[in-house]
Length: 511
Image (cartoon, rainbow, N blue to C red):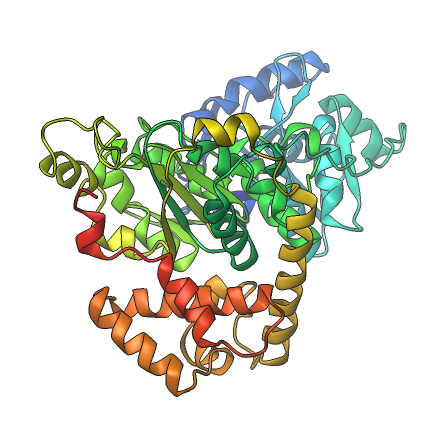
């Protein structure tokens, strides 16, 4: 007789069904776990053996075979402990044969029979709910699993509690979704004095979801501006919060199972490796670009990042997916982010400041700025030179416009975009922002007149715009028109959008 319990294996944020099969057969006593498991799965034998001993059960002197099917799917993690233990107890006759039918089980066992929290509970719960199954998980993961919807969830602290609940001698309360986490204190745009052009660029980027680059000397306020972007972005929808939470659950950073409406803001150090930024490693964990999904990825000191690491961002920025290739399978994580970057014009930082620049100009600026490849620069919609703030602005400058006022305009522009793309939906994937509009859809929402076509023709030649750059200028112009509640994209909108596009020759030369 073979006892079966359902669990999952994770491929990115996708939870794939795994059947834990246990058979007791005559022969030399042994405990084998097969099915392409990693080291943590192999070590589950000792944890299961000790946990069963802790509740008064001893393994019989038989050959115990545990198969994790499908056998060609890699299995990673310690969440297989609990399903193996429950399948083994079913095979021993401790639990009824149908006790685990209709449940997905995951949890790590302690040597005393306690059940420790595991990563990936939310994706597992959503997959179980989609398959009309209940979920058995650690008590600490119950509030996280409850976000998956109306389903039966058994959240237990120990193996004994699960057994008693199944047998009806104890009733475990159904967990409730964790309260939504507070967004925390976000710096206000009113703190920034001067830099009106940079604040305008930040507002346009927020309204359309555009990638943004600030170039300027040290102390100009580039990082200060970038840190205030989350304060003017609209809060996430429930669907977006769940998408973000699933990535955080896989990464083990979803604290207490609480979802937050604030968009993620990730700012990795420039020493980050490719695996840290894009994802990967031994277990193909999500990187910073996936942890920033539906939010902002801020790269300060952009040229200081290793060039291969930066170039690895090109495909995720274009497709919204970070694909990690392995010899026998691929793992994909969502990575729909808004990139905000900051850099100095040269290594010394003062190429644009008369009297402060080093004696190596213009070679210093050329060498420094060419560390960022042209294809990556081409994917940044808004590129702005940020001048230093004068002492007079710091002493006598009036407070800037508060984030709440700017956020209201951004939200209104986002509402217009949503309504427009919903009306134009033809069954394909619906863009959320202008930054995602492409192809025929962009042709429908940006219809230029003769003056607009002439301006774009001239700009494409003078700025040497690639096809991608041409499209991104149109997207920015469409966002500027949305901020002004205009149905048409005019020459003025195009001119402002073009002012935020640096020519390649300008980008790689000293000012």
